[in-house]
Image (cartoon, rainbow, N blue to C red; front, side):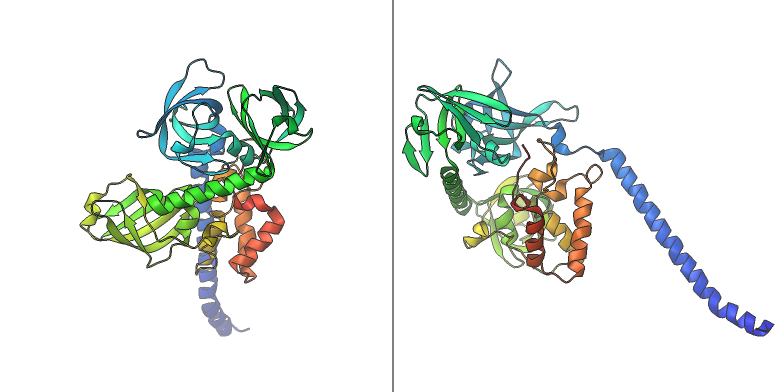
Length: 408
């Protein structure tokens, strides 16, 4: 190649080399920025899961002030009862489903999670459940070890528990039987009051009570509305955002752009759904309202959103109601993480994603969220629908993928 040709070749190739080098440098800078951001996030957020630091106790429910959302509890291991306020978004659970404070029974043993402040002092209740729900959440039932005239000995794992049976109600297949009909080795769910069993249920009866509890809550949603918190208000545009609670996941995500809803006020405030977005275990609604109506609302306000009653299969279908809606690839990935629960084998009450969807897991301390993101991207690249992806995930991970749970 003579000098002239070599010069022309360099003139033609040099811009390509420069552009390529710039792109590589840009990519390296983006990667470095991402790494720097991740390190900064890890430095502030830490690597521990949220549930690891949440105090969890069994307690006896001594009294309730429903109007002010307060309960009096005697925590096991303490000698004096204390009054606790329920956090605004506290989860209440009865018979394996969501519930309301008026459904709890004074004197019953309950399972309670305490909200803590920045110095880790308990300040309020973040979750309150009956014993039946605790057993279901941990996927266990008691095994009957022995039955005496006035007591029953029960075992779970390596722990045994003896309860008096005077006045206890025992149901097998929804048929009420004498406690002495309990069989050795039988699996049962138990609600106790003090040192005695109040309810003893076999699996079929427990599932029937769960179904009835779900039906009762469905009626409450119809009559009262879906619980949520106002998170954004913009009077001049007439737009706002409402974050629905965990329990409203299915009804909230069944809503579509253009649906009409109603906010409580006097008179009630009409609104139209502009956008629906999963946010971990909650559901974010972007609503359009009349600009003047916004003045009746305030940030942080708790309210009950009235919606048109969805068909029953919104509650009973296995898969989410907003399946296969148009979304970008990354929106689909995040939608899946906000619609499924972690199924890792981490034991105890420490995995946030077991109870609050996989999107809530701390990726700085757990590899599962990002591993699932990578797996979902590959499935999406194969042109699988949401339904097909769910079917594959259920085969790979089992039914706990679709329900709040904790490991024994």
